Structure formats: structure tokens, C-alpha cells
Length: 229
Image (cartoon, rainbow, N blue to C red):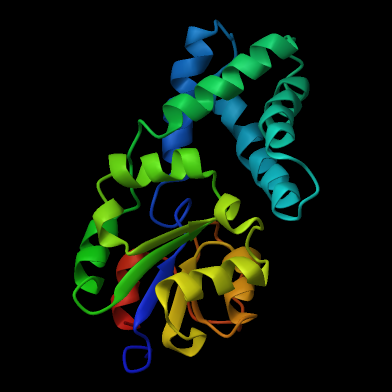
């Protein structure tokens, strides 16, 4: 569908290639025990997962700082669980979470297969709203860093997806026109609409079981990318 016009493929990282939820769960399993936090992991994650998405949306919209994001998402969960935790412990948990998260390297099924399929045919890049200090570790520790020519993050750009500036920076660094590029990501707002807003094609990886839309094609599994590229 896009193979005759696209030369460059831009991927989101978290929730698209790198299995954020699985790696995050393993990280919390480790650090909650180390901090003697007596909460059941499934109950913790049941609240944390949607709470984290809410705070990331606020961060994406420049409504909270990185530090506030890291503190408030944990504070909100413990408050919801009626579990008393000191600010000192929350700050320690937040730091340990960032330190250990990239040590887990689970990728979505077929990630390597798809990247190996695409690499000989296209130039591959990453555009991520994640923090540079940890995103580079995720890429390298999971073994997929060599697949990508350019890795653009929000700290480098000074803005976050869907702000057009980060996409324009990515296009500039990759030396490619938007009409020859496609963005593949899990977020309709940040990845799909953000990319289309500056003229890129888009493919929505439906990692969150969102309703069908007409903004671009939607896939449920990464291997489906082969049908479009």
C-alpha cells in the first residue's frame, strides 16, 4: 500500500516495539519488594497502568514537569490503595523504577522479524516522547538499536508528540520529505494525528484496543506491517 512511495519508516518505541507494560510490571515486582511495600502487584498495576497514561498525557501537553509526572503517578496509586507511603519512599521508588526499567527487554511479538524484514528496504528511525537517558538504554539492551538510523526524543526536540516540531526535526535529521515517510505508533493522538498533521503517512498499532477510526489503517499485530510496506 505504501511501498512505492515510502522510503523512511518512523517508529514509536514504548507500547509499539518495546513492551512497556510487561517490562514495567517486572520492574515494579522487583522494587516494591525491595522497599517492603506490602501491596499485591496485580492491584497496584490495575491502578497504575491507566494512571500512568493520564499523567503522560498531561506531560505530553506540557501541563506537568518530568519530576511531577514521576512523583504524582505513584502518589496517586498509593492514595487510591489507601496505603501510606512517605514522600521519601515515593522519590526512592521513582528513582529505582527509572534505574531498573531498561534492564528488562521484552519486545512485542514479531518485533525483530518485522525490523529484519523492513531494514533492507527502508531507512528506519525512532520518534519517542520518552526520556533520552532511558530510551537509549531500552534500544541498546533489547538489541534493536542497530536497526535505526536516527533516534529523536522529546528532550532533544524540546517538545513532545504530537507537536509538529518534533516531527519536523525528525524529518530534517533523516533528510526526507514527509510524503515519503510513515509513522507507526500506538497513540492516535501523539503518533497518528501528530504525524499526519505535518504530512506523514501513518499506521496505527492498536496496542490499547481502541475503537476503529478512519484516520489511517490500523493493525492489531506488528507482523501486519508487511501488508503495507
